[in-house]
Image (cartoon, rainbow, N blue to C red; front, side):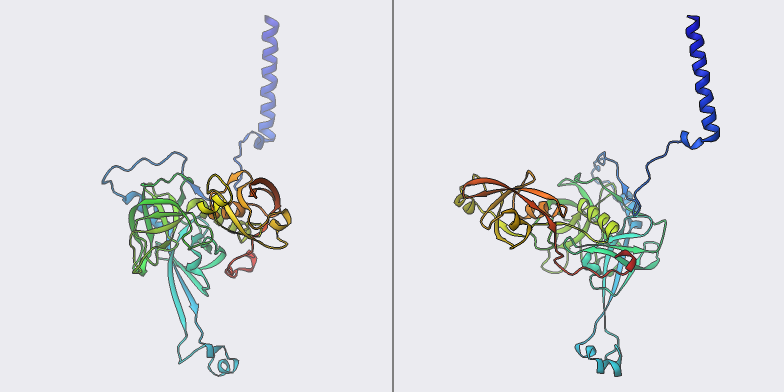
Length: 391
């Protein structure tokens, strides 16, 4: 027993001696270091626990006060030239002016500060074709902004202002929003100044509205008007759940049907733009249409799930993989295709060069073909990069 105690004492003494030497000469080895964040943008993320339900008649003031500093006004200027001004002889004598007055068009919208180092998220249509962009902060400062990049197919753009220590918004956890939840819409409608409106989530996953190529809108009855575009849609705790984008209106004003881009899409697009300057999506070169019950019956399918391939680009990835017009596409990499909109999203999620397994129905037979995805061509001209270093 004495030998065991002696051995224990000697081992402890040696261990303490080793720790003393390490602490004296290599103290960094004893310090725990948290993983370093990826360079680019640091996002504030709400905790995974759901927000506490709001009691009836409770004030929204705490949530509004939390968000207001992170919502900005975006002002743009676009030079307008009459056709005659494009004539070089006319410009030689009169320059870029007509009737002694410069031709300019002004536009206004809203934006959201997403990082303390000056990144601002807004709608593409707010800054489209702008020659000058100014961002007005809640503290009264007005700063010039440059375009980092844009994604016309989701109507999102990222701006950068040269400022630091800014009040960044907190992102909500994705896919936690429910129909019936309270939401607040913040922005600068009609240029009257920053405004907060309240409503509920009327619907989720709205598609085929003809607004964007890729659609998965949050519908809300919180008042959204012209000028609110690019502003924040937040939950009752003040966490960002969407970017206000469009309204349905017969008069130009709010009629209780507004649409916002979900935070899951907005964050994915934003981070890719900041990291790479643009958004890359998969493409296989097919034209599709929804599968109606009548078409499903004619193809002897049990239900109308899937998308009918109406055309295949000759020499494209799908054509090379053996896909033919008239095939019914049922799944991509095992994920079921419900309609043409879901197929578009599944194909876009593929990485260029990735091999995808397409499950198709052809002449009452089930087939599986392999297709190597390409890069989706840009459907509309993107914004020119304002800073060559960001290209």
